Image (cartoon, rainbow, N blue to C red; front, side):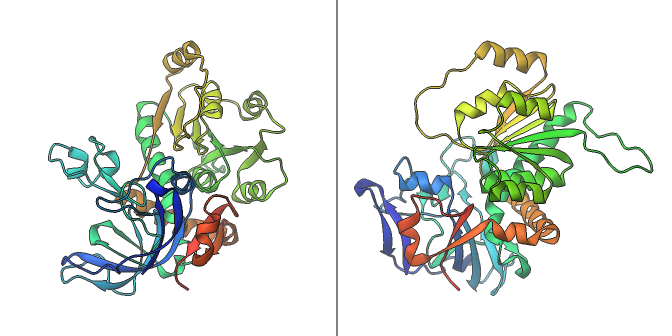
Length: 369
C-alpha cells in the first residue's frame, strides 16, 4: 500500500510503499482510510522539529486526524461492524503497571510519558491506504457525518477542555441566573485566541455552552474566519485593529481563555488580562523559539488574588470522542454549510507537496473517494 511519511534521518517527505497490514488479533479492526486532516503538529513533524518512527523503521507515516471505513474485523470484535465509519484514537497506553491512567484506559493523562501516538511518536499514522488497530481505539460515527467526521479529533480538544472547565468551576458559584419567563442571558465570557480549525471549533463549542464568545486572531476583517465567527454567534476581533487592552475593554471580565495558537508571546500577554475566578486553557504547543519575557510577579499576584486557574490539555479519551461526535451532529444541524466550509480537500498524490503550507482553514488529505 501507499502512505505519506517523513524520514527524519534524511529530512525527506514523500509517498512510500509499505506492506498492507493484516488482522492478527481477534479484536483487530482493518480500516480503509478515507481522509486524514493536516494540523500544526503534522507541519512541525514535516519541518523535522519532532516525530519518532516506530522501532526498526526509518520512516514515520504521518496523520493523526482521520476517518476510516471498517472493511474487516477479528472474530471477537463487538464495538464496530463492517461498513461502519470510524474515527480512531491517537494515543496508545504506556506498558507500565504503575500508571493508573493508562491502566484505566485514560492514556491521555499518562503519568510516565512512555505512551505512543499514531503518526507522532513511535507508531505509524493514518495517512495510509489501510490501517489495522484494536477495536478499543475505534469511535463509530453516524453515516450522515461522513463528509465532516475528520473534524472529530480536533473537536475533542475543545470537548475535553470544557469537561475540565466545568469540573474546576465546581469550586465556586458558576451557574448563570435564570429569570422565569425571560430568555436565558449569557453570563460567562470567553476569548478564543486563534481562528484556525481548533480555535473555530472551540468557539462553536463555547457558544453552544452558553458563553458570550470572542475570537481574537491576526487577520484583519473582513475575511472567511471572521465571517464564520459571526455565523456561529461569536464576535471577531483582529490583532491588527484591536490591542489586547481594547479587546478587554469590549469584553469585560474574561471568565475563560481558550488558547489555540501555540504562540507563547500572545498567550502570556492574554494571561495578564484573565478575569477574576477565570480559567486559561492551553491547547497549543509552541515551536522551539527564543525565550519570552514574562512579568512573573503580576502573573503570580493575579493567580492568587483573583482565584485563577491555568491548565493545559492534550489528546483525548473515549468520552471526549463521543462528546465531540455528538457536538458535531449539533453543529451540522445548526450551521451545516459553516462546518463544511472549514474543510479544504487535497488529493493524496499532491499531499506531500503542500504539507509545508496551509491552503484552507482545515486541509484534509483524501485517501479514498
